Image 1: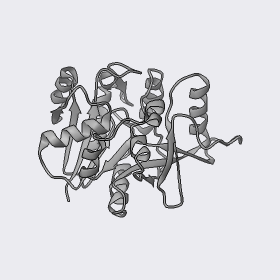
Image 2: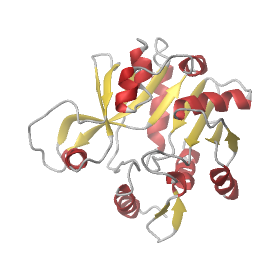
Image 3: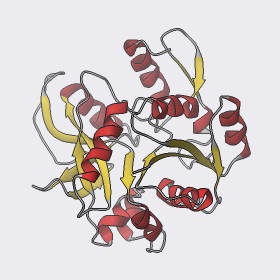
Image 4: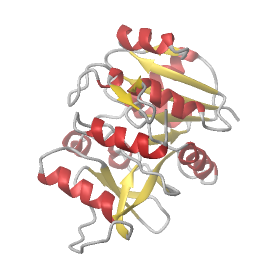
Length: 266
């Protein structure tokens, strides 16, 4: 029943080159790279048998090995984190029950998000891929809308059906709501958390499918499953008062550093 966490990281990001090595200062003023903070987040998860960083870049490999991470070198041709996870398990040559893709731009991911995600996939043997969703409050929704108005690519939103199977993921804010919400009021918009859990066979099959038009337009790797008619389970998670944000743009550095300080993270 082994669970593997893979943290895919590439230097040549289209939107933010060198992002994994960007320094983020915590509550005590200490600067740690994004990839280090993502690794630290993964190491807090219970019930995980192994954590590896998957990259194609020697600068990331050297930085990761310097703080004691296990690194798997994967092909530069990997188009996204899901393909890099598939390459990582092939390189490791071991059998795992579930493979978790903790994307290297989400250092604020609470450990229980991943634990709940793994439990959710185990409870639904009819699906082979799952991802967490977080109901936004008014403050977070305004952040999404402000990013879109400013032309920035902010977080991703998700909509799903009665059985929690995904209907669509988008970088636009969906579903539309014209209401105004107080900072702490619940909204009908769900933030897609950049973590995935897969059964290994589905992960390997993913790379054989062509990239579809929706994945191309949105730049969202999980849409490949939906375009192939494969269900993706959305597992609702509870932030328990924690703030959550991914590092998508240079402007997000200051936002995440404020959150790290508010949480008291070193």
